[in-house]
Image (cartoon, rainbow over all chains, first blue to last red; front, side, top):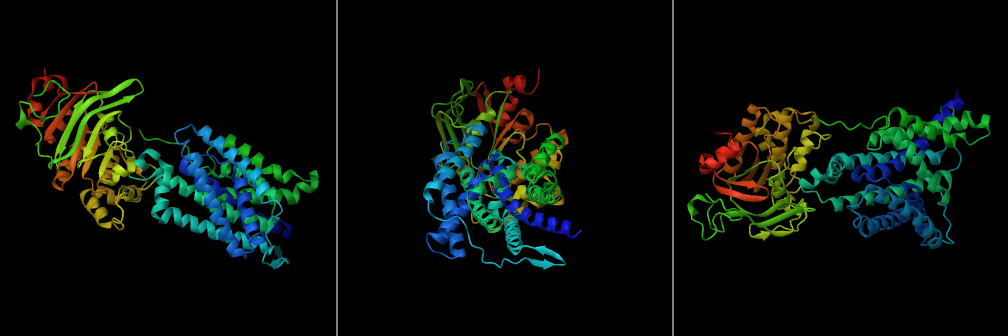
Length: 294
Length: 263
């Protein structure tokens, strides 16, 4: 029983970071229907920027986070200006391929640019786990989850309480109509990508806290697909819940199934769920099929 | 009646000067001059010129495919004309992005209403005022619209997609009003609505002009359109074939025959 509780708590904490990653994906998907296949590379670059802020520039953690955010927003703006605007009227498939290209470019250039700089981000936290009602909880995961939760809250306020958020949701709903009420699409696409930059820094850093930094982080991006397919590509709450489902599922299979099969199943489990979800509810648990009133 | 087409009423040399919108440049809110729009090889609008005076209703009638909707789309910047000018308050709008044209308070309610179906009525209305920068939260505009259309106040929390067709049309017009339009372009506001609702929709139009909004109205229901408009243009295959006072067009045999179903 205690083991189960430990696994569930561990899964929930991992799920909070997954949720942040999923939101970075959904922000862009909702605004422009673009599937960003390179979320993991964005996270990687974000955490590397923070790490280089610490080790290269000699900033504290806060300063390094700001440094990373400025850097990633700059990357996002450049990507938007130089690439996306030129391809605005092209097919969605072209745009999706471009995200893959950018991901490969990021991976390649990060190896060059950050050569010699350590990729780890030191945790400003104790290593001993807290024991809450008999269940050991890793402090760094708890803190990471709390920060992720706060970010999700801020983002949800942004989307539902601010003028820019309202405009982004309108664009997500119907680009033609959004234009017709006077929303500048390009400006708001740029804002959406800027958000991706900031979310990449945050989730990349949190993931480095929990799992150690380095280049393995881009694999985190692949986890986003079971999450958003399960939750619904265009649903913020859905993708958050999907993230928790995947986090808990991974944790449970790692605890119960991996020892039996010799390990590795936990990494596959979420993709099995992905496939099952595609068969049963292709629009996700919380996504909506397109219904049109005539 | 000008049956030669391609002529703007009020141009020098026309005989029926008094039938037409006033010539004074101050009174003309919108002047479309020799506009050509093509979709690929299809020439949808071929040299249309028209004038919308300030705070007047101008109707645009004609059969399906005559180029009426295309003309509106060209004025609001959704499609780019390859020739001609759209002068609004003396400034050429051609080439401006849609959102900049909206900021000049030229508002287009497209055919099919353009609802944000998965957003609430209130959110749709708030978005209507999006282009009014520095206008505060739009609360007075919202109150004005709710006073005009009480049904929207009742349904403000509902998703726009769940409204009936008539309510959606009302919402579309109300959303446009949130932008305090100087020129409102309505594309087929009566399409698919029951006759009683059509009457309701058309009753809104005089209220708009009373508040200083000019209305450019595209309608297949020619009788309704001509009854509420001051001036009208008849489009056929992308050209103006008739224009003049709406009342005169209503009585003109060619219009009665072709568009009003009279024998």
